[in-house]
Image 1 (cartoon, rainbow, N blue to C red):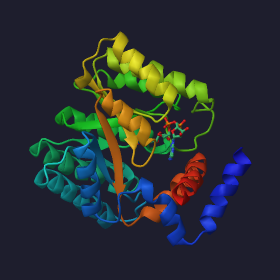
Image 2: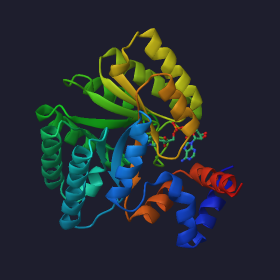
Image 3: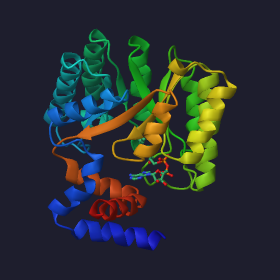
Image 4: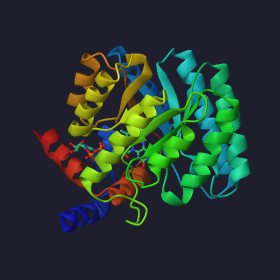
Length: 301
Ligand SMILES: Cc1cc2nc3c(=O)[nH]c(=O)nc-3n(C[C@H](O)[C@H](O)[C@H](O)COP(=O)(O)OP(=O)(O)OC[C@H]3O[C@@H](n4cnc5c(N)ncnc54)[C@H](O)[C@@H]3O)c2cc1C
């Protein structure tokens, strides 16, 4: 199916921007912070939490990194003013990680500090493998000073179980565990679907047994069912973990998890960089192209 996926990605790239927008719209709250606030209000009204994210990854100047930080600070203000049940996710490269790690740390520290004063929380998204060590380093430094910061680990990475073993030693470890979205070489990443799932469950068990708080980020039915069984086996209180999903994806499963009484949080991206985000995600995970095309046909009905 790979050739078909690649073909779909190619076709999507040739589409007029306006049409890509139609396909991508279920996955993006809108262009502005107010759009993200509105979507979060709707989610909150259903008892669902959100994590907001402003789109845009590859920046070239420190000024752009400062702008990203300022936008995230506005998000924290809006969450507080509107009394939303939401936190903020950030991509460290958007904060200048690849320009100057120390500078990036300084911006993140400011943001985490502000979030702490608002009793809120910042999640560092995990990016591609050249950034893994850097993001873990940032997390460790921030975690040494602030309780209100978390990291993401990806179960397709062969190193992840050992990373979790190491990070579990930190006081109040807080993870999002996902499969991982980037295309990585087989030397460092599992490629088999079941291998990635089994590593997800093995790592999740380790994290939960060590007492960490985990955001179980998946739409995969098998992983959701296995996670249900695991939290039951460990007799975990529902305050010790949450499920997480992307905006617009598998809303049926989202509602079932919510109805079953588990905490659930939706990743809610917004911003003017929606086009680059959509195309980048399509390129990184061609399976999304199928979902987008399916979505298009469903919407036509
Ligand atoms: C809250 C959240 C945060 C994330 N943060 C990161 C991160 O920081 N770093 C990172 O590398 N990755 C991140 N990801 C992406 C993640 O790594 C996976 O690529 C993605 O979630 C797909 O994996 P899956 O476990 O849902 O399983 P899959 O097997 O890919 O999907 C299971 C099923 O879900 C449905 N589905 C999945 N994706 C879509 C879609 N886009 N549209 C419609 N249906 C879909 C399909 O029915 C599919 O069969 C995040 C994912 C979530 C949910």
